[in-house]
Length: 292
Image 1 (tube, rainbow, N blue to C red):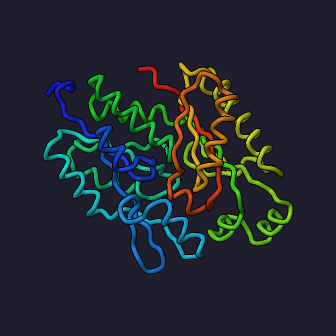
Image 2 (image 1 turned 45 degrees about the vertical axis):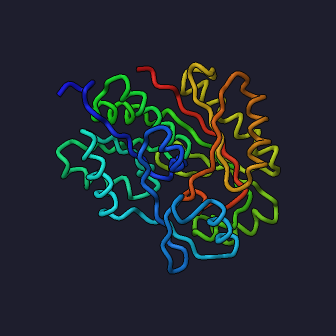
């Protein structure tokens, strides 16, 4: 069958930040990510909202992320394949979860009809990959071609995240209690980065304003030195946050002032990331626009 005649479905997971309502509007299928809170299982954007998640987190509930079950993934694919010929499945970064590897193994039984994209994206950059897949589909590319294009583009994105507290990094065992105590005493605002598959330390700020400046300088440097220029024609620019919408809106104004002419998308950080960093975080991200 000619690729232009193929009916191709774009699937991602709720780590992308794409809500069920946005997914319905854009024609994207979203696999909800499961969470274990205490002894109960919840699914993001189905029976666990952003507000409910942070309420439970701030009450000290024990929260763990989990992978979707193989049955839930295959059931979704099989239902989709009743109406579509091929699927492009874009899970969260393989460096942050095992769900990508699991999906790749499951796809082996679908005779090439399911193409799993391993392009190291999360949150707003993962969302952009899903939107890029839709645009590529409209241009007539097959699922395999879309997968290859997105994977070839995988290093052309950056995320910088400033944390409000070190408590959740300590709780998750990502820093020692002593380092967390010292950081809290010194009122340090750590800035983390996601480039490729890892969530890494990037810098330490003493104030929120200093942290914002560090992030804006870093994202500008990536645009200019790695992605070919800080222009709206070349870059998608995004803001993400955990819980505090007012702080995010204020930050958006600062980003707009620093990067005039950009149409800046804003969305909550995925709960799978929020689990490890807590409320009150701000992030700036960018993706190089596909030239296809």
